[in-house]
Length: 291
Image 1 (cartoon, helix red, strand yellow):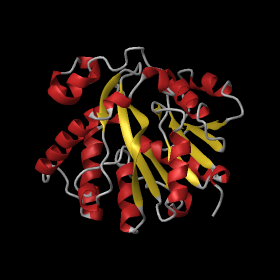
Image 2 (cartoon, helix red, strand yellow):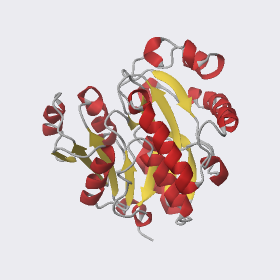
Image 3 (cartoon, one colour):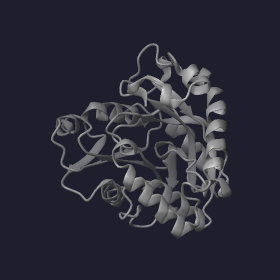
């Protein structure tokens, strides 16, 4: 077996006009304790200062900026440029949680040679890094996956040998990650949940879940036809039960969050209000900036 320290990890980042968070993304990768990482950023022609950030990123980041056909196209181009045996995908507004994420993930792949996808828990944060809630991830359950997407995309890493080119189906513009998990599961690829927080999911007004909900519903209907998933509104009760479980078990992760330990920029009191949001309040009652 290849020695752990010899496994190259490719981190793929699609980018478009998210300069506000891109520096955090780059730093969270650069701060990783694991030594063998290549970070590839595919930018879609940003006009907001992104190129200035990339120009000063140094040799640890390879990047191009050119028009593309969307996020899936950008990821596929980055995948073709990459060489790593392990592949991570983290969008430009997200980041890795702490400095040992990739080291722990690689150790998991080495210990489990039959596993092709390793994923962990995810911390959902605001634009300035304050904690909104913990997105607890369950151990892999094929039946549950066909009811709800239980894998937060930035928290996942994949074995290159399990992937094909193109890596993502470019006809999906919202649920491309969900389609990838379902495709790999249909091919009997192995999934493993690592019981640690691996990434952050940035909650802000420009994210796709807020701006293209019609595309989201169209993608979910297509996945139902392709993989037999339970599209809304069918299965809403099962999904609601999972989300309640996710919030309760996510509360157990809150003591593990310390601002001084994270690899991204966070306020000193990053957990302020998180216990209440995690357990005792509905999302509709959160402050406007956190919805």
